[in-house]
Length: 372
Length: 185
Image 1 (tube, chains in turn blue, yellow):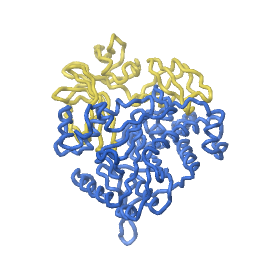
Image 2 (image 1 turned 60 degrees about the vertical axis):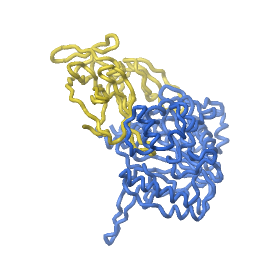
Image 3 (image 1 turned 90 degrees about the vertical axis):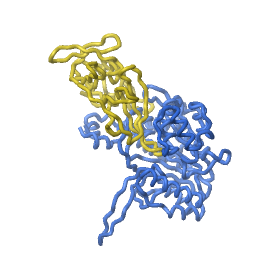
Image 4 (image 1 turned 90 degrees about the horizontal axis):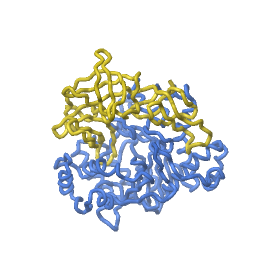
């Protein structure tokens, strides 16, 4: 049964679906309170950042006089954020749909999803972790406040005023998810990838940083890998098989300092040249957010995009148009900045205690694929 | 040979040269290293259950199996007994080869039992099943963080999140794929 029909039969199902709406409202409130601009980014684009595993949806716009515009449906807003930062916009956020060309759907995967991206001028990925913690706590208080007040009643309140409402001030900052409790009150776990590799695989990153060494390591552990496999694929295979499920779930987990090959748009970590300043947030073993201290060097970015473009050819991934305009923007000068993207559908699953991404969207794509 | 997009629960595949039942499958694509399918396999020979990640595009050998639609009868030790409605033959299926164990076993449900070399190796459960609520509390506004749902226990002992208006004694439809509330009967 389509979701709208279920809702028509049982209107009390609505609160679960309100969760994403409230999260979006809370995010707007949170960033407006920090005086951030909201950037509206386009869905249709004609050039993309070169990333070897980016799956994109394509379309063709038929213009008059048989002119055709080959276009993509935006898989990430990052290029717009950087161009506008280069123009001088400063701190800002985006809330928009992004699209990916996935071959299947999953409990955590839909080809279209709602993304929050925000950029903090002069900051690094460490600051992003701090803001993320504050944002997730505020979202919970905001949702809780809406059990006592109408949207209109709290619309004029500041973040501090909402946090200090008597009904929410002292609530437990915990989320009940699938029978477990996630504590978001205390600092989230922060583990670097080299630490994780040591802990779960008993290996140093420096020992497997070379692809051939990593291939041999994987083969010795019983993985079916080929000699021409990419470092990232082996990492994801091992991460998905041996690490992801073992990450703690009693608090959210930040993983940071990813191997350089996994982050073509990220600044290196000066303290360890093998890694970049990239962070990912995991809650209940789900990847929720992905942020970087942004690479702002145009020449270095161009070099890395060319490497990624070549890798796409090698991997027989769809060729995607090169975004020279982005390189142009970076070369014209970009301030030091960090940025992070957060999947609001997965976040809504956790706040609504829903097991499947289709259970928090009014019009889930699963309804189109699994027609009853 | 089957592609990874054809993987499904209850499928019998050859893995490390031995037959295995695919108990669960989840597609995921982290966007950094390609797409994957996380599966839970049970070795038919050793009974060992483990997780495995298939890379998208890998080929998997599917094994031929025989299957019959049967009725659930009762639990016996760590297995469930199903009956062939035409011959009244009974077969025992181990709990870990039934998705959800006893969670979704009910006399009214139809189960497709797979056999490999004559032995029952998997029970495919109906995608939706109607069960009676035997325990839930009357919700009060503000009970949960999101005010979205409350916990209820159904007659099989399975616990499920249900909308606040659902009461004790009512029958609800559960989606067995996700283990979640689908609708009131």
